[in-house]
Length: 191
Ligand SMILES: Cc1cc2nc3c(=O)[nH]c(=O)nc-3n(C[C@H](O)[C@H](O)[C@H](O)COP(=O)(O)O)c2cc1C
Image 1 (spheres, helix red, strand yellow):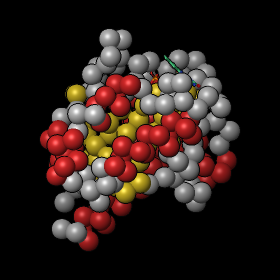
Image 2 (tube, rainbow, N blue to C red):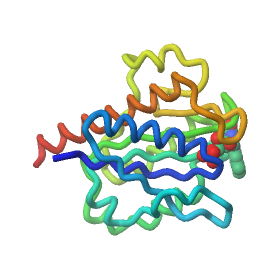
Image 3 (cartoon, rainbow, N blue to C red):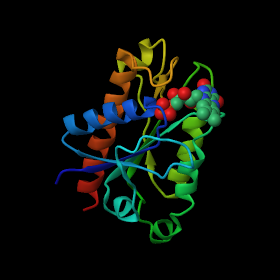
Image 4 (cartoon, rainbow, N blue to C red):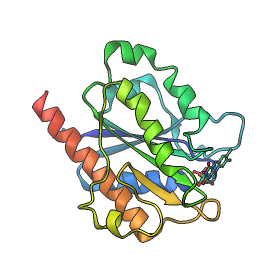
């Protein structure tokens, strides 16, 4: 069956959404279905292109890739707030053994991408998910002079909502492909 990968992200000016779209491209090219979802904005104008995530989306996905703008070196509060509503899924172990990954966009090169990515992994680990990064076998991780990290996909967004460069896009596609492949093999090992 086609692996269903939930791409859960928040984006105010569109940069994180561009990463979400490149990740979705990777999911599709690896034979998966990308389920694009966002969270309610916290009183600020945000991209409303995709539906708000539901508990059912968590229950029915085979993997999850979460993206946030970097906000003072952390994920946006709207995403943190969402995870604080997921106790029922956690109690049932609804995400246990499913693969997960993270992505972020920041305006400056050393403005906290890695701290954001690593802190975004924490709720996913509490949910029992299997964390996936981007290995150095992906040439974009070796060669990038902007975003793209072993901890997850990223974009250095010098002008709000700027386009991904080639390495950032390639790394994001690879992450989507990798989570999809791992989701398919984990599911066939634990039907
Ligand atoms: C409240 C706030 C805090 C931010 N903190 C950081 C930061 O710590 N480091 C950084 O490089 N950029 C920071 N930024 C810039 C955003 O991370 C950047 O513009 C990002 O690409 C926006 O993503 P979006 O277009 O998906 O909304 C911050 C922006 C806001 C509004």
